[in-house]
Every structure is written in structure tokens, then in C-alpha cells.
Image (cartoon, rainbow, N blue to C red):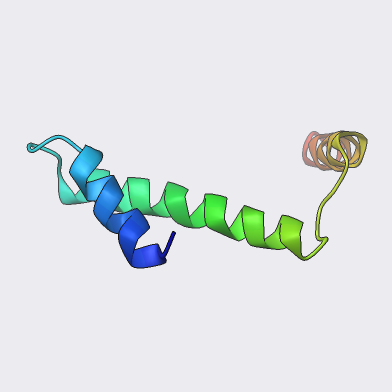
Length: 64
């Protein structure tokens, strides 16, 4: 699906009374998902254990 079609589909699904902020938020989510899919396709991914290790390191360093 093209980016334009994905945006059009998103707009069709949103309620008529949605705000510009609502649209921007949903576009951000759509963009983030697409970026993640591209990174996975390029082999740029971390295992669940790697992510947990990184988060623990960040939490421990910010708690000091």
C-alpha cells in the first residue's frame, strides 16, 4: 500500500469530529510503524532480551 493510500484510509476511519491533533497523532503512529517495518526489513532489529537489557541499563543509570 502506498503512503498516500495509507493516509487516505486513515482519514476515512477517523470520526468526522476529529481534531487536527487527532490526525497528527495517528499519522505519527502510522509513521512509527512504517519506520519499524523498514528497519526490520533491513535487519535492524533487537531481540526481546537485548531490549530488556538496554532498558534495565537506562533505568539503573537514571535512578542514580
